[in-house]
Length: 239
Image (cartoon, rainbow, N blue to C red; front, side, top):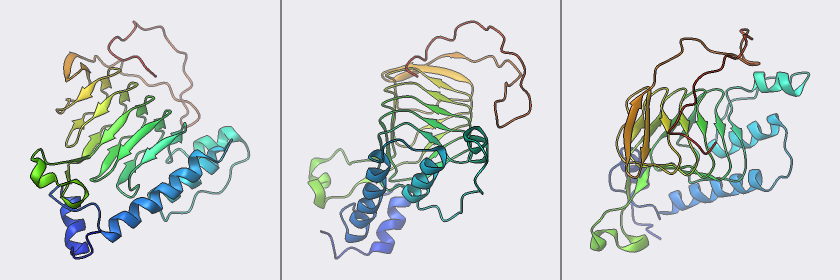
């Protein structure tokens, strides 16, 4: 391993998305810590909402205490809205660079490479087999140099109220604005402005989303208004 590298300086380069070395003792240990926590979550059988939140705290190294237990599972869901609802398995690199808003859903087999910060806004839905990549490698093979060479990254930001449909890939440095839908199987290489549908490989903007101006709340809100039929939204798919 690259024991001669200054770990503090290396971490600073990593956080800024600059060239850094991933196979230093400290970063290898950090990935092993996260891998153990992720494996415990993935292999723990049936879990309650609170147990999922506890595992998420461990994965992300979140020091905050969970709120006191509620009387019912429905009430627990409301109490624990700051912690994501996760369908397993999930795959995460470091965990400490993942920032998630409230009432977020992450479906089966999501992969998050959090070399740099990966942030997911409140009420966002992540479909099955979605990959969020904030890490990348140099194109020059001599510089890349296998495990002895440097890597780099770019922050991934997904806004509030987004739907990232199944098998979509978000690449390093990309920002997906609030309220966006990313179609199934898309590879997002460039920023997507708020309230747009984008799809394809590479993803391109298909249309702007016209907002309804109203929100139907569940257990986390008081407005229990009736659901009105709306036209089918194309360009998504893959829950």
